[in-house]
Amino acid sequence: MRLTINLDDDLYAMARSHAIATKTSLSKAVGDLLRRRTGPPLTPAGDAVADSYFDPVLGIQVSRGRGPITNEDVARMIEDDDIRHLEAAGIPYPPQES
Image (cartoon, rainbow, N blue to C red):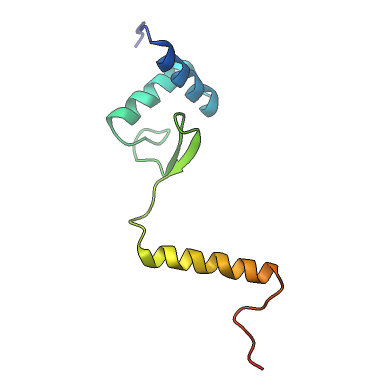
């Protein structure tokens, strides 16, 4: 279906940035942004929610989580990061008992 629309400069810039980032036409970019506004992003086939998408406003790839992030998840990530630093410094983990 064809439709002619007039966009404010900021909306045009957003749609154009999205089109460039996703390497699609401006028409497809406007459609994608409208779908995002009315619901979660769709896969290219348009049948299921995508796991990740490029957010032209933030300028980053956004991924959907598998569930809530708990305090235990955060503690485990911090510990994993600490372990990587120790290993990079040549300090064995877990510590060797002498």
